[in-house]
Structures are given as C-alpha cells and as structure tokens.
Image (cartoon, rainbow, N blue to C red; front, side):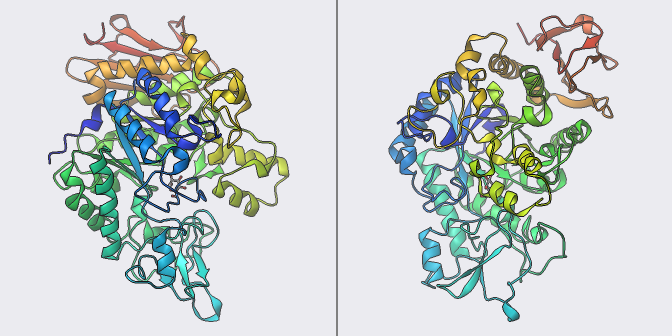
Length: 554
Ligand code: GLC
C-alpha cells in the first residue's frame, strides 16, 4: 500500500496516560478521561495523539514494562475504553499512534516466565548468559536505570540482560521467533485501526555478537555495542516489508545518540525506508551532558546548533519530528526558558520550534506552561531512574544540592497530573491523585488559560492555526541568522511566494532588535507576537515575533 506521508501536515499531542485526566475517580488518569478531553485536544488544533503505553504492566517503569502487548490495562479502561477513544479520535479527524516497546518486556510477561524455565519455544526469547569464572558478570555493560546490565535468575541459573530496569529483561531480537511476535503485535494494532507507532528505544534492539566488554568508562558502558547495532536495519526492514508496508501508517523511532547522518539511514523516504521520523536527543541536551541527569548551564548556541543541523541535514531527504518536551525530560520552561517569565518564555519557546520544518509534538501540560515540580524530600519521587540516581550518585553533595539536581533532572518533574482547574487536585481527579500535583495549579491551569486571551494556551492555539495556514511552514527552506549569538534565535522560512521570519529572545533583559539583511519589516505583517506593544528597536525579555510576507494569511 502506498504510504501517503500524511503525518507531514499534522500536529501531535502526547498523552502520558497516568497523569492526563481521570475519568473514573480512582486517582489515576485513564481512557475514559481521554475520551472526555478529545474536544479539548481538537480545539487546540491537534490532529493526532501518541499514547505512551496503555498495556497491562506491573508498573516498574510506569508502563514501559509490558506484560501483555495485545490488551489495554484495566486501570485505563481496557479494550472497550480504547476502542471508544480510537473511534472518537477518528471521528474528529485525529490519528492515534501507540507506543511499541519491544527492546524489552516486563519480567512478569509470560514469555519471560517460560524462558526462565527453559520452556520451548521461549528458551531463547531473552538474552541469557552464564556468569564468568570468579563469579563475574557476563560482560561489563551498564544499564540505564539500575547499575549493571545483568541480573542473575535463580530459576534458570543464568544471568539475563536488562539495558533498563531489572524488571525489564531485553528481548533477543536475533531470534526469528521474537521478530515474529513483534510483527504480530504490529499487525494486531494496525488491524484494530491505529495509525502508527512510536517505537521505544528501537535503535537498541540489535546487540553486537558475542556481547564484548566495553572500555572502562564511568557510565553507559556497552551502548556503542547495542545502539544502532549490527542487524538493526535488517530487522526494521523486515518489520516494514512484512507488516508496515501493508498499511498507510507512520512510524516514529526513539533514537538516543542519533546524528542526522545516521538518521538518514533509517528514514530515507524511498520505497523500503524503515522509519518515517526519528526522535533525536541533541536538542534536549542544551543544558546537560549526554543525559538530563548531568546538569550544565543552558547554552542557547548548543540548542540552535542542534536545531539548525537537523533542519539542514534532513532537508529534502527526510522529515523532522519537532518537540520540546516529553515524559522523559523535565519541563522546558524550567530548562530553556524562565519560570519568572513563564508565559513570555513559554510563548517564545513555542514559536522557536513550531515554525521549523517537520511534524511538531506537544506533550501534555506544555501548552499551559506547566513547570518543574519541586518536592521537599527524595522519597516523594516515583521514577525508578530518579530514585536510583539519587541513592547512588553525587553522595558527597549536601542534601539540598542533591534535591536540586533531582528536580532539575528528574523525569517526574514532568509527570505530575495535568492541571485542568484551580479546584481540588487541579481538577485532575475526584479521588486521591496517584501522584503529587504541582502546587502552582491555582495559577497555572487549563480553565484559567482558556478564559485569558493572552494566555500561553491561546498562544499555542494561534500559533498552530497559523502554522497550518501557511504553505511556507510545510515546505519553505530554513535558514538561521546570528548563529553565534547566545541571546537570540532568528530563523526564516522561505518559499517562492512567501517568507516568514521568526525572532526569539532567550534572555531576561531587553536586547536590540536585529533584522537580517533582505527582510523589510515595513512590508511585512506581524502575524504572531507575545508583546502587545512591540518596539521598533528592542526585544523585551523573552519576546518573540513572527513576521510574514505573502498572501497566505487573511
Ligand atoms: C524510553 C521511554 C522511557 C522508558 C525507556 C525504557 O526511553 O521513553 O520512558 O523508561 O524507554 O522503556
């Protein structure tokens, strides 16, 4: 079947279901809640939803540890609620994509239970190895969440590999039976009517033969042997050829440490291309080293370099996925903007990415400017990665400093319930919320922002509608100006008949307005701004302006 690449014209919304909206009063978000909010999403201009995992799961990694791939967890409303949401989304012209998590399963998945007992055909579904002599682990690889990448299993009498948590054993994708299972899962959901997949750490699924030891680096040992591993393209091509090619669907691959050059090997828009878009991490590392946990001062130049590199290198060859937030990173205003200038910087950040070339994704709560949650004590954290980091790293620092590191870096900073109203529990639930609500919900909530014409929420609506109305945003060329500036981000989009110029200040003090050569503002229309009284020569703190030349906006 022809792949029509419909995703190029869409704006997606990511739902992390536990914290979106509780429809049945048990304190946890669910699909009944999503159903109630479909019109809200539509009013925001959303054309698609990416659901973080909804499947049955013991919850060791908030759903990314799956114990049944062909069902929906009862706490989210089961299959019945899912079908209703899927239909409701489709009725409103919205697509639905699911999270496909097949680098690993839960250790409570029946495949693992059978594999540890060496029951055929499951014996080699996972990566099992005996220990080395002297009680040493099979190799020196690290896991991303909990120390070493190996866990001894008493039942089987061997170690299994877990690149993430101990409760997330890695599947052995070299086993054709496992690939068969993945294809069954893909087909199951596509036949049910879903429109595609976000593929969780999919670039990790092929491990280097013989699993060699890595150099003695302080962390992440092994990653070069399993990220973009030896058979990755072969396996993804197989999934494409045997299943995805039969449906007009889309795929979005999570790809840590992917460069544009590497990405192009996956996302070639030619017959047989394996993946439609990649989730790159470079633009999420402008205030950290390699991972959010190693915090550094924010560098606008790093951010711009990442954005512009991806824009340029993929131009005409692949399609960018654009994002500022997801469930794995702290809130963007707290990182790249300013909590003091919450609304202004939130709007500026929106304009900074929404007019780039690609398909934008918005993470729940981003549209109202939710900020990092700051708990008073470490035991309030839920996230397995955060807890492990807290207990095992930076032990020499004071308690206060360690707590600060946590809220700067923790995934939980972005996992608090969506703030719907100024009422009890931020209107998220009528029960007891499963997780803490950020106390700023009295000021920061959907209800208040819907009423305020100058709110961030209404800015998002305007920006998204504008984006959709302009052909130049879909197809125009991208160019950046003042690339060395550490205060401003300026870019243009240009096509034959239209021009767009986006000016963004990333600082909390006034700076001179600089207009690149060739752009005559007197002939332009200011189509979007976050300052009611823009001045001729100055940009105010976190000011943004979008100028337009052409006939596309009435
Ligand atoms: C991805 C997910 C993250 C999860 C991890 C392991 O990075 O986005 O939330 O913890 O994979 O599945």
